[in-house]
Amino acid sequence: MAVKPLISTSFSYETLEEKLDIKPQGAKLHIGIPKEIAFQENRIALTPDGVSVLVSNGHNVIVEHNAGEGSNYPDKEYSEAGAKIVYDHEEIFKAPILVKSAPVVEADLPFLQLNQIIISPIHYSALQSNIIEKMMEKKVTALSFENLKDDSGSYPIVRSMSEIAGSALMLIAGQYLSSFNKGKGVLLGSISGIPPTKVVIIGAGIVGEVATRNALALGASVKVFDNNVYRLKQLQNNLGQRVWTSVLEPKILAKQLKTCEVAIGALSNEFGRAPVVVTEEMVANMRSGSIIIDVAIDRGGCFETSELTTHEKPIFVKHDVIHYCVPNIPSGFARTASQAISNVLMPLLLQVSEEGGMEEIVWHNVHLREGIYLFKGALTDFYISQKFDLKYTDLNLLIASRR
Image 1 (cartoon, rainbow, N blue to C red):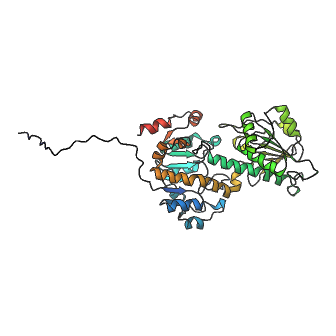
Image 2 (cartoon, helix red, strand yellow):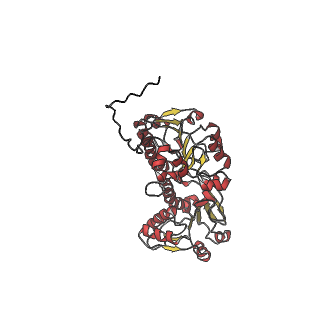
Image 3 (tube, helix red, strand yellow):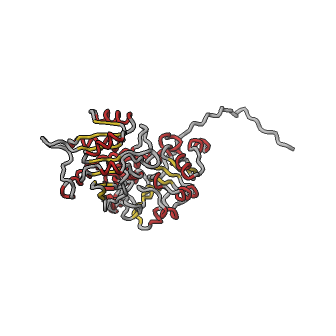
């Protein structure tokens, strides 16, 4: 016989409350910092000061032996900051979050873990499809330095690296113009009664702007070329003074290059190769002993005569003109560059923890989405998908579908 349900007058029925999106409790992070084996990479993505803040917030940080050597950060400083020093390269890669100062290379692939989070640069020009495919296979979530946006909509790491490169240019130029380096024996800048040194800067981006500021401070005469008139206008506004500017007109450019002591190539495309705007003929007509610094060499360079050089052997001479074509100039000022990167990544990692992990922060932080090119193995960067003919997935749809 079926038992009748018992109904009591003491029952009270209440309406269900709507659930709001509540942030979960902070997640504890396990972060690994490997020693970079990539060519000429001296930087490290987190300084001992940055590590110290993370550790005092309850996170685990493991650092590979001598990872900070290139930036003059010994292991002792990391262990004093609370990090654990690991001697086994493979052990470092077992950390759920990897923070690298160079892109993922072929040698890293066997060590990648399933569902790992990797924060590193991406270097579009040197990208290989097998690396991306292997990371997709391992369901990696990857965040790139270059596309990392802050709340103001600018790219903080790219900006810092460009500022370092821009500041370094005049130091490099001054060094190679001096007689000690068998240069022309010209002082970069000006002194009373002697016409100022002429500097031609091609590209009015951040590198061009900082280089212009430094050249003007030294007293040089500066001429800036760019095809983007808005950028040239912005450059003048930011400098707060009138500067000689021109669009890229070959005849005007050739004429200015003919009489300058320093020519700087700082033009770049967002993707792909930098445009070549200075022909070999223009270089051949330049003054002997003048110097070309091609900052755009990372993307192929904008002088036809440019060839890749290294920090060890930074220059070669062609048509009697010194060429300095070292890629990754900030790596030559590794300690400053490491501090700049760490200042962006350390607060970001704290934020990831506060939000309860990468999945959560991506949901709440729209700017961060621009930096993600792999999300749990799905390729979310349209440019890479086009380049290698790989399946593209819209990150916003991915995030929404997981809710």
